[in-house]
Image 1 (cartoon, rainbow, N blue to C red):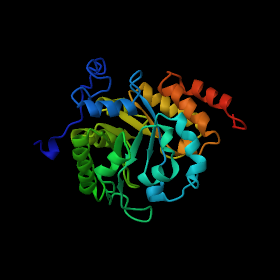
Image 2: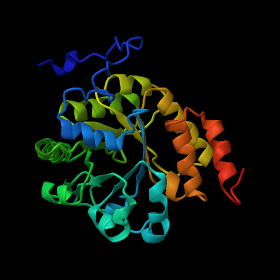
Image 3: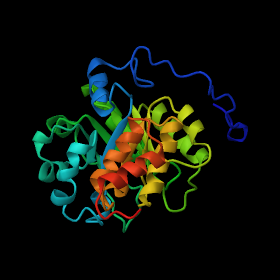
Length: 295
């Protein structure tokens, strides 16, 4: 093992040599079992290799935050317009009609609230319940550098091991504490660790400098989080830049369900992720699909 004082930043990122996806359309997925590939093909569109995920799992630690007060009114109507739903099992069972037919990435970590240390989580869903719900994937936070880093990594490992037995992929979600630096070096570390321990996909954040190297250094697909609510133009530009630099999709929540035109945002994100639209082109589509939306 390398000494800590001999760790050096990577240099050869192979920007001019695309990852071989000739045996399976997703990076890092060629050697998965049939069932794992089948579920990944539900999460990511095979024709583009990308996804638009709608995240509304925030209530598991934030409670009824803005836009999620009545999920039956705010979220259920959006489900047909996303590729994938990311939510807790409680929200899924109480709010989303099974006939919606959308694949679900199930939030499987919990154990904290905004009033406590966020990294102190546990695995909150047994694999049998994920199977019972027909989950296409499972998700848990990994808090690199936080107080309970080891525990969060252990949680993700448990999900990966259980999911591998049943052919269900695990998405490691890079959680960031209030005191952590949100830069390419941190997310490069966090996403690589997640992939090395076996996560089949990773959710992380976009950064203005060095995001392309984060993607290149992670051997599995990365989807970006939306983070805090941004003006729609800025959120769409961020999505465009992330896709342009190699992200395999977006998993956005507040930038969709807190928008004045949530369906319009999902349609605009689809144009970016699957249609190759720029941020400006997507914003124009967003304006065209909404009523009383500020220019």
